[in-house]
Image 1: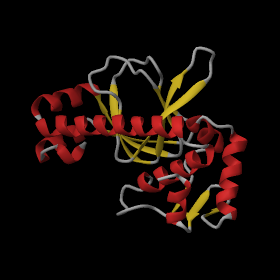
Image 2: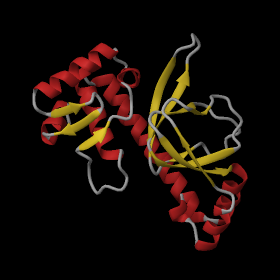
Image 3: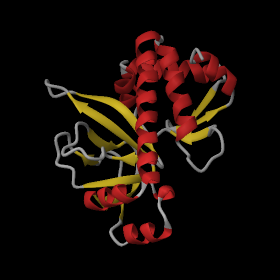
Image 4: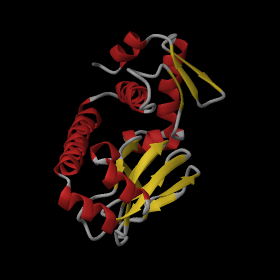
Length: 215
């Protein structure tokens, strides 16, 4: 968001901004919560979660740095947001954003562009969940993480810490935890990935992973 602002606007926003660092599992926003602030993700992965009527939850999206966390102009949040890993946030009040939106067409454009990208991501995941086999789903999620997990890296990251538990993988992909573990093991035995300390993934054969994802 800050990249769309003029220096004077940045200075004004900076006086109302705070930094927050939270551990994995921390709830950042509750579904139905009154929107009083927004945030930019500085590092880490945030899960967007939709509560179900029977008490279960469904992960409906993932956000990475430098994504904007929150839905502008909404009075309440439709989904919950939870830290999937350790997350650092730049937090600012709703009133500050709405004031800047009124005077900065570049900021409006930036927020609109992110909303459209999130829509494209949702459509892609609808296709993945509806049409792909379990192994393709697991490989597709690894490719997504490699592309988005490090915003400072030019291109993909071939070595990264998994920011989600395997149960989160399963929830997001509509699979069981056992199925996710089985396909990660198959990728490892095929020499496509390595997994150290249960969370550190190295992609040794990127083209092979792309093929496994059916792309």
